[in-house]
Length: 606
Image (cartoon, rainbow, N blue to C red):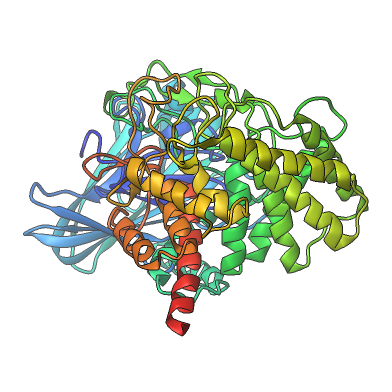
C-alpha cells in the first residue's frame, strides 16, 4: 500500500450526498459522512498514520493495477494483474434520490478472482472526526461495529475478520470464479444495524446501481465529438451535487496541495455561487434541466434570505444546505499530503468580497429562462432590489475570483461580471415586462464598461489586465467573450488573447496569473489551472481559431487521469495537483466541448 499515492491515482464513487475516493491500489483513503462537508472517517490521503483507510484488494508483490468505470456509470472497477492470477474490486454506492438528508451511507465493495488465484487482504481502520475521536470496536456475528461519539459504522464481510487493536483485518484466498464482499455502513448512534446480505443480492444491487446511472445519462442530448469525456464529466458533476438541495460542491476533498509541501491547501467541499452558476449553462447544454433548475432555485433562496438585510446580497460560498457559516480551522495533527501543511477544514474565504458572483448569479438566472422557468413577481422584486443595490455598490475593490489573501484591489474581472449582472438584469426586465429602475441600471452598466476599458486596459500589453494598479494578466478574463463584454473576434479581445498566449499559456496549459508579478499573500507557486485551460479552448473557438482550439482541447485530454477525472491543477511534470476531482474543471470541459463542436460544425458547413 502506497503511503501517499499520486492524487490522480483515484476513482470517485458516491451516493449524491457524500463520496469516497478509491486508489488504484484498492484503498478507500478519503470518505466523509454523512455529507460531503462532514468530518472524515477515512483520510489517509491527508495523513497515512492518523487519517484512517479501508483496504480491500488482492495482494501480490508483482501485481499491476488498473482502474476503469463500468461504461457510463459511477461503478468503479479496480483490476489487479499478477503472475498468479487476475482479480478485480468493484466499488459503488447506491444513489439516494430522496430530498431528505440521511445519516446512513453504504459503500459496497466486491472482490473477484477472474483468472488463476488471488490472495485478498482486508484492513478497515476508521478514524472518526478527522482522526480526533476515539472509537470502540465490537465483533458481532457477521459484523464488526465501530462506535464513536455521534457515529456508528458497521463492516459486514463474507469471510471472517479478526481484531487488530481497535481495527479489523482479514485474508481470504480466491480461485477463478470465486468472490468475496465487504459492505461498510455508517449511520447515527441510534441507527438500525444493516440487514444481513447475501452475495447474490449484492450482485443485483450493483447491477441496479449501474443501470440507474446509465438511465440518467440517457437524458443527455450531447451528440458531439467527445462523448466519453463529456459523459464522464456529466457523471462527475452529478456525483458532486448534494441531491437534497441541488447544490454542487467544488470538489470532493479538502487539503490536497496546489504545490507539494506548500501551504495552498484549501477545503473545497462547499458550494460556490460562481461555480454553481456557471454549471447551469453546462447542464442546460447537455439537457439536464432538472439539475440546472434546482440549483437556480437554491440560488434564489440565498438571495431571498438577504433581501431585507443590510450589506452584501450574496456570500461567495455556502454549505450545501445554504448555511453561510464555514469557519476555518487548522488540523495540526495531520501531516498533510506528502507533508503539505497546514491542513485546513472550513474556508475563511467565506467572508471575502468577490463582486463577480453577482454576474455569475444573474448569468444563471437568465440562462434558465430558456426552459420556461421565470421568476414570479415577488421573486423579481428580490432580484431587482439586488440589482438596485449593485448599481450603487459595484465600484469597490475586492479580493477577486481567485480568493487572494493579499488585500483588496480593483479587479477587472469583478467589474466585468458586475457589468454582466446589470446587462442580464436589463434584458430580463425587458423580456418579461417587469418593473425595474432601467435608467439606473443602464447608467451603472455603461459606467462599468467605460471604466474597465480606460483603467483596466494596458496600452503596454495591448490587453485587459488583472487589476487597475499593474500590467498583470489574468486568465479569468477568458470569460469576457462568453458573457458578451467584448465581441469574441473584436480587435481588443484578440489582442488580449494574444497577450495571454505569450504570458500565461504553456503548451496549451494556462496559469491563472503570475503570483510573482501580482503577489497574492501566500508563499510558493502553483501549477497551471485546468479550468483556465478549458476556458482558453472556449475563447479560442469563439475567436475563430478553431484548429488551435481543437488541438489544445485534445492535448488537455492527455492530462486527465486513467478514468477521465481532473484535479484542480497540472504540475510542472504533468502531475495532477489540488483537490480532486474538481467540478469547475469538468463543467469547463463541457462548456469547451459544446462551443468547439459548434465552431467545428460551422467551419465544416462553410
